[in-house]
Length: 483
Image 1 (cartoon, rainbow, N blue to C red):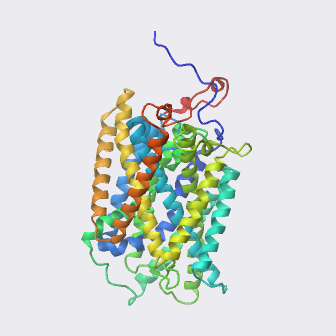
Image 2 (cartoon, rainbow, N blue to C red):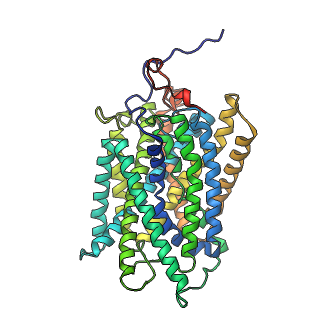
Image 3 (tube, rainbow, N blue to C red):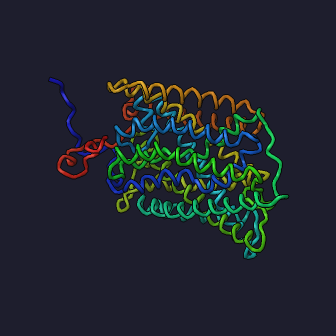
């Protein structure tokens, strides 16, 4: 007879809220970390200079790649309730050392995405403030960045249910606003006989970098896995969110890119990442610009919330394991949120982009630099989870042909993309790669110090929510909703 380990009396991740979020709120986590409305307006304009007439094809390729990644993530999400998403998944498939690398890489991705979102939100809020006479400049952006960070911190400490409700409402408005603005701008450009511009030129040597940048339009969709413990039906809600989000986003982004191809939205002279619509007749241009700035500001703020929520859950898991300081694994006694991890992460997320903005030549350079570092972090983590999925399924005796083929194909294509982008003639790609590698080295130094070979810490890597004795007597039974 096989001996089974005793059921725990306490979950390794006890302290976080449990069974609180509906599927819609889990989906809101994925959507907020992506910031689709901000991406719809901003990313095509950033990708076009490098992709040229291949812009639409670049976004289609990015959507396909992310759908493959979502399929691999879903293999884990329908079998285990993690609090750190890909970090726990990769550790269970690859082991402690490469698993930590995937988790630390994801932390870099989440942090850089949140930093970029702070810059984006503050810049668009500064543009709105400039309409009523407030000076637009680095100082204003810095102050507004602090405000954005403070509001986000308060919402996230208060509870994931509140933050997901806020982000969902914000993104619904922002997507509607971005769609309306792009539709009107496109119709005006097409209807204006003299308003069309020449098609974007081809820059085939930079397409690798453009594709890496386009992938940042999707990254964060997997963050639904970081709130699995807090979801009501985690083994169904999380897989659905990560499998379908890339497909829906792909449709939005291809449409947004197609709308901007005839006449790309240009950048503001004062605030480099704030975009300016083509002129329309009467007062429509000003009204649409205000609507666009409101929508994109809201979307960037939602992305700060979504990315930092995922970041804090990953730091929380590492704190519980002992890989990082154990204080990071503490939760608020009333709100049941990882408040220590949030209090550590948010100041860094706010201060670093403000300092970067002070020394950089433009906010556009800051945004692209941060997004590229973020893309490296996400892509390496995605490669790890795609490799881990078939290995994990083989270990538990559930490997089939589809996960093997999808996982190998996605990992191979993503690895080739990283090499291609790194060899691009676009300077920021090389600089971002150097920053990413340095941060990875720092992370592994900390890991090797705190988790020496043979230590109990290594055996804890990949912590997840386990069944406890109380679950047998309560209605929280995630294993019953596995299909």
